[in-house]
Length: 193
Length: 193
DNA sequence: GTCTCCCTACCATATAGTAGGTAGGTGAGC
DNA sequence: GCTCACCTACCTACTATATGGTAGGGAGAC
Image (cartoon, rainbow over all chains, first blue to last red; front, side):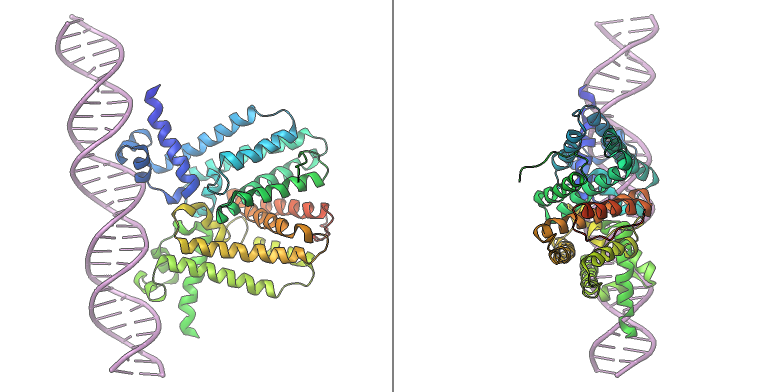
């Protein structure tokens, strides 16, 4: 069991690098340095940088799937938990979602990376869509609302990254919650303010 | 007048590269190739890659300022024009905003670039804030709404970039419009659907 | 003459990736 | 118990190429 630790360590370090410096902003040397092994040793675990990047995205997609399978029962709580995922797990203000981190460099990343990015997006949008479908008041617009919430979270993350302030993320999300509440979908618990 | 053309051409090509490949995804060689001159000639116009990047962002900020000074009189139309700016000028689905393109690589870009990114963001958020302040119904939440609209547009751009479909941008923006309308701010003209 | 704009030729460094080797562990056959 | 083959996980040393950037020169305009 201790044997797989290095591989997991590499994946963890790489994910962190992607989230803070984007895919184009880190090198195999950076990964090696942070893991504490030499660069060529990385090739024992991953054949190319592309493969490592793809694996990080797949792991993130799987992790989201697992997370989605074990969260709160009501739609309102599910949505709140989703916002918290962005706020805490993705460290809004100082980090990006792995998918969002790759999008700006789209024209110079390999096809397999693009596919993996889309998978991570799809997983989230589909889950959100199911959440909105569960409530009859939002069922008709479930797909559109899902796309909206995903984009808004990504944008809030991007915007907060520019200022470096989590508060800016919170401000945007508060508006997203208010928007959904205003439509009387009743999915977002009223915040105290 | 023809003398400044090369400089402008460099800026235009670079802006396009940043929007499609991000700051870390292009090289001086790429710029030189597209402009049609040799790489060292670029250094006659810009001392470093950083300086070129900063100038692109400053130009974008100025361009937005000029655009903002000459748009429609009513708040509703101003907002519509803003969405159109993202949809058409930024070519939603196949390109990013220059500011949004730099944000994911935040931890490995120089301080001057960061400042320039923030300026472009601030310019937009402040303008949006003035737009919302102009209407008594949105005055109280002008700042929050401005931050929300900016983030939502950036997110819509990012999300559409992943799928490559402008329609995904449109879907998100339709929800943003609906959200503002639902709050009865009356700022967004009803769409036919 | 000198200033603008571009050139060829070059440099140090960093990049992804390779070649080839070593230390230690595991299991099979005897 | 012992050897032998094979494996994993890492290493040093290296290659080709691309990167941002420099030195210095040439042709034309004022």
